[in-house]
Length: 253
Image 1 (cartoon, one colour):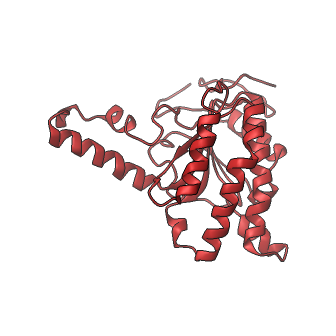
Image 2: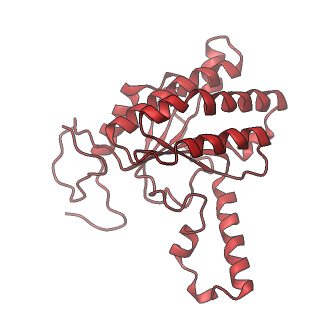
C-alpha cells in the first residue's frame, strides 16, 4: 500500500502490516562500517568506502520516493578523536564524494546542504563542499544535508551562544526567547524535523545526533551494517514507520 511522502494517519486506525509510508523527513546514523570491514578481514577504511555505495542508493531512492529532506550523519565532532590516519582517509573519501556524486545529485534534482562546524574542516574540503552546494542550489527536489563535524550538543551550544549575543546587544529580549527562537538558530533551521530516524548495525543510541530535532521522531534500528544497507532495508524502515501511531504527546482513540 503506497502513500505519498509525508502522509501518515495519526488516528490510530487500522493499517495493514504492509503499509508503506514515505516520511517527509528522514535522518540516518550510518553505523557499522568498521564492523563490516573487520568481519570481512579488511581495514576499517574499506567499510567506509563500501558505505558510499549505500549513501548513493539511499539518496537516490529517497529522492525518487518523494522524501523532502534527508540528513546523513557523516562525521561527528567526536570523530575528530579517532586516529589521525583514519581521519585523513575519511576526509579523502569525503573529498571524492563531493566531486563524484555531483552527477547523482543533479540527475535526481537534489540540493546539498551542510550541518556542522566549519572551523575544523580543511580549506579544500570547504571549497568542494561550497562548490557542490552552489552547483545544486537551484535543484527543487529533495534536500540532502550532510552532518559533517557535527554534534547535537555543540549545535545547541552554538545556538545559545548566538542568542546570548543578541540579548547582550539589546536586539533580543530574554523573555522573548522560546522554542522558535532556538530552532531558528540551528545549523539548518528550514529543514523539517525528522519524522523517522534510522540507525544501522543494531545499536540503540542516538549518538549526539539532532538532539533538538528528533524529539518526536520515530526510531527504526536496522540490524545490518551500513555497507549492507540497501533499498530492501530502506523500504522495511518505511514500512515500520507506516505501522506507527504518532501521538506527539496526545491521546488517540
